[in-house]
Image (cartoon, rainbow, N blue to C red; front, side, top):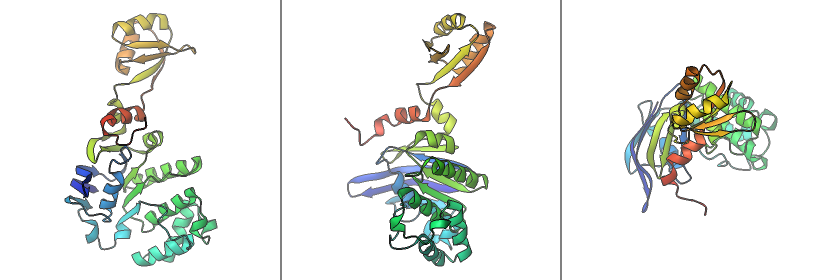
Length: 299
């Protein structure tokens, strides 16, 4: 369990994190979202003890990071995948970390196999692609077999297979009862990976809720509908306040009305529904909820 309470961090006149509080519970993947410059990376570095807050506190299983007896065995973090000496091999990098954390050589071999880098273990990291560097960073985070894992933008540079692997890894770790906090700007991937979301903007908490509840916050909810008799259904939907749009493939897009209301209207008509698909997205909700918190906006 990670507990963030009243966390504030200033860099000169810039307030990077502003009285931020949230929890990251074990047994689920918590997605950490926010626009560029919102304070996500700064918050994660404070959880790992790499930055010190001006006020507030962070605890991991009830302790501050600096008070953990064997930090690498309790918390694993990927905050900057390329922060590795380019002249070292992947194996040498992990073995140096292992010695610092009192971890066996056999565990180095295990994590290299886990992330798919066994065949390039002796290659210099400076020759690695961006995706290979990400895999090595994840290997470092998992080296101590920790109960708490923080991954900052772990799928950057990964190919589709790598992204899918990272998603499965995060969900498997959570299923084992571990605490998993992952940040990403890929909304579609976060919707597939996370159970719970923490959204911040300009260093402040905007929302802390489940993925389903987060998407439901969007006012742009819409549904794809296929029914036995669209000509009969459309007037009833519009009388109930819905906006409807006929699609060329005998489908209907319905906006401003809930799934329950659509289903009940069809039932009243004894009009069989063949499809009722939610078209709302995590991206829509994210854009709407962060509208006033974007610091770097293109013209």
